[in-house]
Length: 155
Image (cartoon, rainbow, N blue to C red):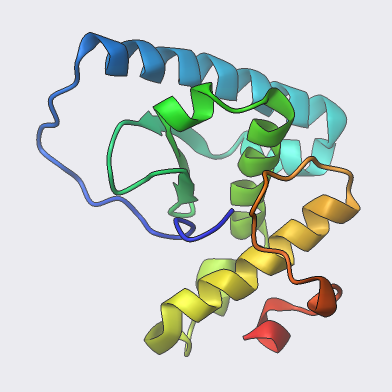
């Protein structure tokens, strides 16, 4: 819900995982799959979009929270396992909305200032989630003075 969004993870040949990492990845996958089902029940539109995305728990310093590449949602497994369920589901919905709102397509012409665009799209998504009653994690990007503005207006 912040500065990891939209950063696709390049393929890495081999990352050494310890037993704690493997356990965290398996647990995170179970939690996130359950969150996806809850989204389908509680918010059918966003839940149905989520069903078309692959959920990938990772143990990787390039993804400290969560991000998406438009076809997969990556979650740092340790971070996901330590989040309250409501906030974890909000972060999942956040990543799904980036795909649903075509943020990758809308970035065209803004690539020179990717960081600013990321803040603008995070605000846009977090406004939708906040208005829909999701419990957002502390410190997420949400500019009270710009509520109701599109990412392009914020940018």
